[in-house]
Image (cartoon, rainbow, N blue to C red; front, side, top):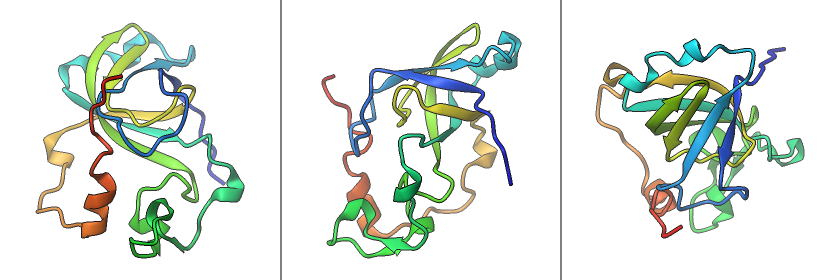
Length: 156
């Protein structure tokens, strides 16, 4: 058994889970009181961070352990849960690379975090070029279709 405690929570204007239009979402991650503000020292020197979070709004009964059509779309092939980035994964973990907007005390404001208000944050890691893919990225066409509007900026 692995037990994780959130390091903080997301504050966002997004309260409902949606599949698209996360590009201009600005959110703040407020660290738990157990963490001193110094735990974020130096993060503002990075342009991006990877946020690891828990899809707390997904009920255990919805967790997929086999295959499904991504987003329930039968036009896309049935693929294993580990061949997609859906939220109904066995451990309900999300990971997103976000742009760092600013840091203030124990709060980190970011852009492009696809997590709703109240989402528990499990970790924050600075993005370093050396940890990005070192070879060309390959992906199927259905995943490009799925992601077409995901990061689209809306007039919100």
